[in-house]
Image (tube, rainbow, N blue to C red; front, top):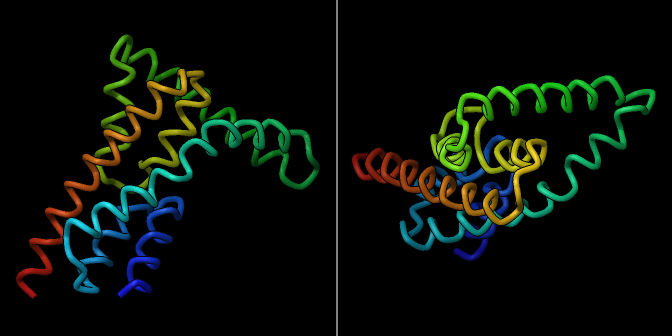
Length: 154
């Protein structure tokens, strides 16, 4: 059973998959709902401070490198432009916009993407982490409800 918890912990840390993939896996493995939820939330949140403080710096560092430069520059430009559009639309509701961006479990959203966007937007660390954490909790509740419902009928 410990091996199963380790699997969902690792899955929840993987970009783009995150807890959106780990929670259904936990229910497919027959793990208890509350324990799985806690393990997936912790696993999904561990990378957040590292992304916030280092991802932008890595992209900026690689922007002028021969092989990766175009891609890294593209990521920075796309993130900056997207962030500015989000900022313009959200106005003072940027916290809520980030929370919902992370919390609504659709492909391309989540803690990784939301934290990178917050970093590019120069949001402060405390409010970024709080919005991402609340978003992860929301996504976790949605995924757990759906997964529990699906796997209880199987």
